[in-house]
Length: 413
Image 1: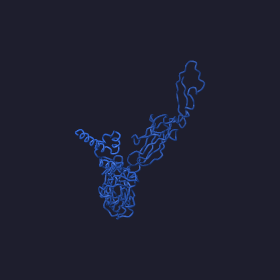
Image 2: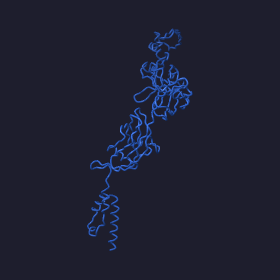
Image 3: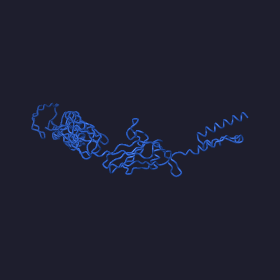
Image 4: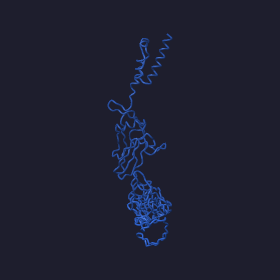
C-alpha cells in the first residue's frame, strides 16, 4: 500500500512524504494515526532536532575565568563536548561531590534551557581577541558563539627600594609578541621578553636606581599597554643585633634586643628563631619549614619569649638561630640582619622545670663509697635496687665497679 501525505512540523515548511506500507492480510487501517503513531511525536520533534544554540554567562573575560553555558536543540541523552577554535577544552557540570560529563536531557537541552545543570568551563589560555567556542553533541549537531579574551598583566609588588626584584606576568596578549617593560618610558632600564604562542609571559626585572617617589612601569605587547604606579622608597637598613650574643646560654625565657632602624618612620620588626642555620633553605627544606618562632609587626626593638614559646623550642632542639628585619609602613621589608646562635638549658616555672634536674644524680655519684664487710653481709638486692633507682644509669656502672673491687679484695684476704 502506498500513501502520499503532507506533513508540517512546528517551525518548518510543509513537506511531501511518500510512504510505502506493507500490511498483514486482514489488518484494518482506520485512521492516519494508526499509520503515523501518536501526534505527540510530531509536536516534540522540533525540541529534539531544532537548531542547536548555546547561551554563555559571559562573552568576554580573562584567561581562567569561569563560563557557564546553557544549550538547547541538541540530540537527547548525548554527551556535549566543547572546543575553542577547534581545540577541545575541559567542560563539566558540578555534581554532588565531583565533576561529571555534560549530557543533554530528553529534550536535547542542558542548563536552565533544559532540566540539567549548566555546563561549566573556563576561558582558555589563548591569545587576546575574539575566539569561537563550539558545543557539539555525539551526532554532530553543533552550536557556536564568539568570546573575547581580555589582556591581563600583573606585577609582584607596587613599592620598594631601588634594586628590588619584581616578577611581571601576563595573559591574553598578542601571541609571540615582543613584551617591553619600561620605567618612566625608558625601555632599556628593565628587561624585556616575548609572549608565547598563547599570548602569555613571565619575566623578572630589577627596579632601577631612581629618586624616591612615584614612578610609572609600563608593560606592552606593541598593541596593548598597561601602566602601574610604583613607589620607590628609601632602602630599609638591616637591624644590628644586640643580645643575646653569639653562643649565649640561657636558663630561662630568652630576651632579644637589637638596634632600632631610625632612617624611616613607621618601622616595625620581624623576629625569627629556627633550629636550622639556613632558616628552612638548607638541606632541601621548604622556606619556613624550620621556623620555630616568627613574631611579626613588633613595634619595639626587643622581644621576650613567653614560657610556652620557650618550652616549645626545647621540644625541638638545643641550639637555636635568630635574626631580625625591619618593615616600613607600606609593607616593604628590608634585608635580614646577621644570624646569631643561643641555647636554652631549662625553663623554671615555680618548682617545676621543663628539663629534668640532674643534680641528684651528680650528688649520688660524688658521695658513693665502698661498702664495708659488715654492711655487705647485711646488704640485699632490695637496697641495691633502691640505689639504682636513685642514681640512674651512671650510678649503676659505679656501684657494680665498686662491688667487684670489694669482692676481689675480700677473696684475697
